[in-house]
Amino acid sequence: MSLRPRSGEHVPPLTAQVARASNPGGTTAIWVRDRLDGLWCDEDFADWYPRDGRPGLSPAQLATVCVLQFLLGLSDRQAAEAVRCRIDFKYAMAMELDDSGFHHSEALPT
Image (tube, rainbow, N blue to C red):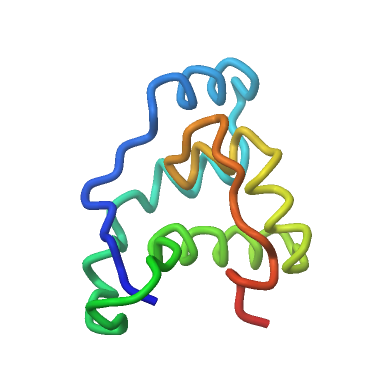
């Protein structure tokens, strides 16, 4: 798998608006994004990926979902489902609202 970095990825405006409106008090996922944004980026992991091949998942997004998985005590399946279904997870991972996420077997270490 190769890496196509998502440099300086910002939360899409509609995702941010809906996440804030539906969770005015915030959630753990929103807190993680707001406090840890910029702690890691895809370029930090570039040396771990070959230059050619099928594009891999964003390592910065995977790091974020792993932190959320740990904090919320989620299984791999639950974390992958949260990425697919929860607006606050999409906010934390700077995803569009219609992003389908990823399958639990290809993303999260066990």
